[in-house]
Each structure stands twice: as C-alpha cells, then as structure tokens.
Amino acid sequence: MSFTFGRPTILPTHFNVLLPNPLLDQPGENLDVPSPIVARILQFDLATNLPDHGISTLSSISFVKRWITTFPNVFDINDPDLRWDAQYPRLVFQRFQLHNIAYSTLLQLVRPYLLAHSRVHGSDENDAQLHDMIDYAIDTALKSMNAAEAFYQATYPRQARYFMIAFCPFETATCLCATLTHDDGTQLPRRKEMVNALGRAMGILDNLRGISKMGQSAWTILTQLISRLNLTDEERYSLKQGRKLHELPIKQSSGELDSSKSTDHGMREGYENLELEAELNTAQSSHVPDVVEGGLAANFLVQASWLDEQSNIVSQFDYNTLDGLWEWDESAFESLVVTK
Image (tube, rainbow, N blue to C red; front, side, top):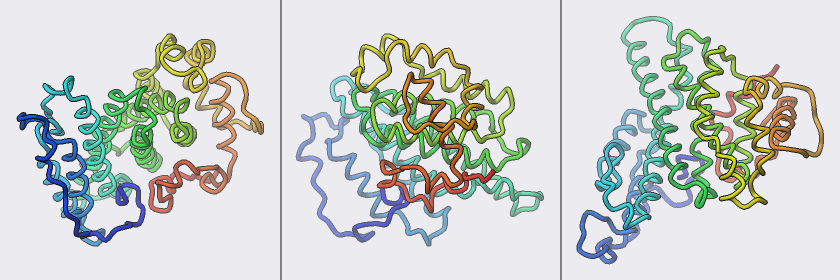
C-alpha cells in the first residue's frame, strides 16, 4: 500500500514475521474456497517482495505478473471461479480488492510511460521499445479503471465508504488526465477509450461524493482537471456516455441511500438535465461564492468554478481527506496543474 500511494514504508521491506496458517480456518473440506486470511497473505507477499524502486521497471512488472498468477481460482484476474460467491460473499470483496491492488501497483510502475508519448519522435529501435511500453501503460491504465469500476459496482452502496472504492478510479483518472493533457490529439493511441474511462470515473465519483469525504474531494478535483482538457466534440460525447453508465435511477438516489447523505429527487433530476458541455465550460467561470448552497447542479458549478480560479490547486484547496494517502509530489496530479 505504501508503494501504491507513494508513501514511505513503516516496516522494513523484508520484515520477518510468522504468517498464520490458512488451513486452520479453511471453510469445511472445500479446498476451492480459500481461507479468509489468504487474501491478506497475498497482499503481504506483494508488499514484502516487490523489488525496491532502484530495480528496473521491467523486473518489477515481471514480479507483479508472477504474483498475480499465484491467486487462487476464485481470485483469478481474468477468469475467476464464481461458483462460491453466493455462499461466501466475502470472496467478491476480496477478489476485487486484490485485482485493484494488482492494477494499481502496475500503474505506479508504468506511470512515467503515460507521459512519454510526447517525447517519441523517430522510429529507431529505442523508440520502438518505448512505443511498446507506452501501449502497455495505456492498456494497464484502462484495465485499472475497469477493475475500479467492477469494485464499485460490487460494493455500492453498502460498502461504498471503503477508501479504495473512491480512490482507485480517482488515481487512475488523474493518470489518464495527465496523459491527455500532454497529448496534441494526434499521436496518442486509444485516446477515445481513455476519455470514456474518465467519464466512467466521473459517474462513479459523482455517486460517491454524497457518501464519503474522499468521494467528494476526488470528484471535485477530477471535475476540475477534466475541464482543462482540450477535447473534441466526439470526445466530449464519449465522456458523457461514459458517465451515463453510472447515473443513478431517481428512485434509488432517494430511497436506498440515507437522505442526509444523498441527493433528493429534484436535485438529481436537475443535474441529469444539465448538459455535460455546459458543466465543463462553466467550470472555468469566475463565480466564487464562499458558501455552496442549492441543488446538486449548483454545487457542481460553484465548486468547479471556484477551483479553476486558484493559481495553485495543490496549495489552495483543502485535500485533508486525500493527503493522508497520497504523496502529491510523486503523483501524476502535479503535472496537471496548468498555469493560465
């Protein structure tokens, strides 16, 4: 987790500790269902054996890929065994948690390549290798968003306050924003898919911002970053379609969730009728009230507008919720602070 969030480690990398025996709480004689502690042992294995930052990126990626192959069938990252999900609901949460840890770790390793496409000019062997790594980095980012989306869908709304539900799509989306910010719109492969992934992240965080402080902070920041992107009309449509995938039915937003932590019927309906183009354009307006009041759409416009008028987003906004997790200086976010 320290590596994923760019934080210093608390324990030594090779910390000698006696691991629990997973067979002691194996559920019955069914060996297809791992002990509840297995997921934690897998995380511990990654944390203690991931090569240090000084080791090559390729070596670290190879290690994470090998680690992924050690998952039990019920946690398999490509074709998991779902037969036992109904009987053992914990498997669903543990599976998506492991998947997101895997992709988040890979994303941290390949993140520099998400910005490298702007530096590729020729076609010699070195540039060819760099192109391959750029393609792999983009593919990893998109898969990371898919994993974050699946985790959200499996846990919303009952377990939606768990920090990874909001943080994983936010972290991936900021990396995608950084990539799109440095692209001239002609060289970047799979650009439309990346924009659509940003829309899906917006939809997820829009739903989470009424549930958790992290969801609120992440949504506000991401909306501001997306408003700075130079998108074509087709890409804006793709962004809108991505966000629509996670629009809540009106009856759910006013029924399933506590009314004190979610939007009411009128607020949600007003927001749904607001065009995405108008929202992103208004994010750069000059309206700066001190107190945010009114409906959900008004909250969006006010907060996005206020953020855009700060000359330095990192220093001017209150990021206390995320500050405990994210090392800002080592994140992709720093490269997104564009001075007008």
